[in-house]
Length: 195
Image 1 (spheres, rainbow, N blue to C red):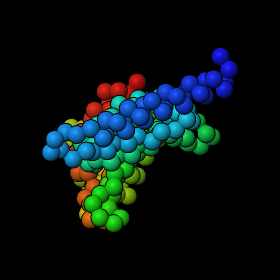
Image 2: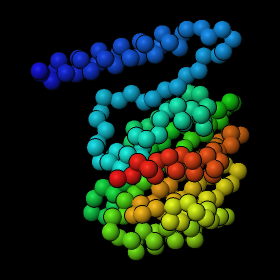
Image 3: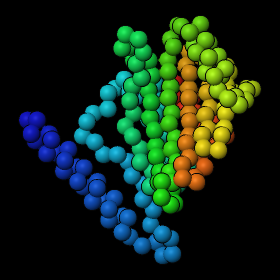
Image 4: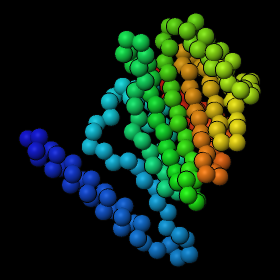
């Protein structure tokens, strides 16, 4: 099969999906207002390294809609590299517009694999904890965990095995960020997916 026909086939499938989603959004549910949940459509392949740990692919758009509300936009997962360019993790994010001008909420998740560098992992975790204002330990979560919350930002860090998991949320324009408990639930669900 030629690359031109492959591109046409992908474009046709994407157009069909968009048409089906568009028609579904136009249907009536009686008194329920139609909601819109959007995933970013891209013809660029997601690098396999960006989903190697399985954290980003284990979080669904429905879960994020439950946390952020309607009109969630998911960004494609990306790989995290360190030092010499070696892939050490993955990163993903979701955004939703809120009510009013400039109102929004977001969630960002990262997973980093320190492999056999346990000292480096322990030091990175301790540095993050020491540099986080209002850090509160979360006993019994992973090997070590903490959270911190302000009026517009929430963060949860979990060290488990040879991984460092991070979830953060921002609220803007009067919208509150996702709570530490909710972010913790997102990370807890992803921990079982780690290789």
